[in-house]
Image (tube, rainbow, N blue to C red):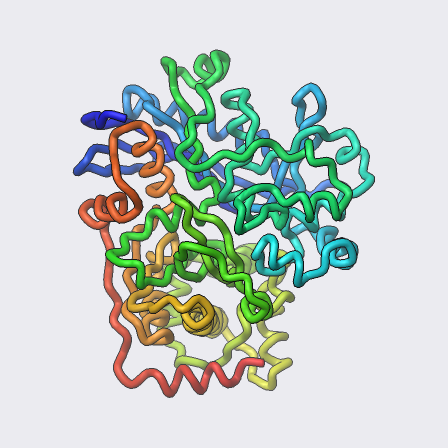
Length: 491
């Protein structure tokens, strides 16, 4: 494809608490990005089941595309990335069969024994390479077995694929997000008949796979009219799992790096050429998710800033200070390692009263629970940094990848205390930023597919380094012994 002088793109980036449409202008030496529209993403509980308001998300996307069109004058492309594992079911007419169930709904883990009876955990890992998480799509589908919705379903679409279907009418499954389901073969990069047949699911439920950079179609005429856009506007498959896009947005200079995509979840790992499917890797809880350009995101899911976000919600509901800068300033005054917890403790997964659960976890390990908001926040940040330390070192050990620098991208890059603690804990320099790594990675894949950019990941990342702000945090000398002692306190 011939290179063009520049282009304008909308990156739809959906997170667990909000969605954004980011407007971008891209050229061979230019990458400008700004937020055109932000909208809430709220979980809704009905009759005891936690759902996503997917129609509300779609309405927010349309509003965002309208805003991006006004800002940019025209749109040369659209790409969508979101969180993983959740899905919508379509009937024979292509209509949605109910709101998608939220991955934090309690019903999913009830199906784990049934799945493992059909496909043992060791075999499941050899095929999919996924860290065991009780909300992976494979368990969600088993929990929905024999429901009227699943019986009536003809097509399963993951969240970004569902939204792209409404925009274009095209049906498919983008491979980076499909790799989080537990139903994809990590080696062949195709749907696993062994897993699908083993669970008694119809193969026809799973649509054709698409790769980042594939053109999905163009905005439908009714969408163009509603969004006030002039067509044609192509929709391109990007790394539709937001972490896949975020890793594209890592401004690395070599392959000797670890990344922390730090938001509600912290995805901590290294970028590889092939999956690591050993029993040791499975026992360590590492996952092999597929990335852009044939890469593998070898990582471990750490609970992430969810711990802090849930504390803020609880404090705000109680009428206490919940402003993040004030909380971080208070935490900075608290001595290190006053209390630490295992950030991956399953008790922290559900929503609700996180400060109490953190206090209970501290008490259970013989520590004095945090006595103030500042102590609770410091406990969270120290505990996250310990989890990053453990995970970066284990990822390097299991994969054989040398790590010389840690790239921390996403919203956590704004948290200067967490960035410094991460450098101290890992003993490695931390490059913090860009904050909007997922939207930038989304945009870069679109721009390359549209002929505005060329080259592989090294060339795309060179443009990031030349255009985006990154801050370096050096580890404090002599910190290793204190971090090792704190790590030893964890169960």
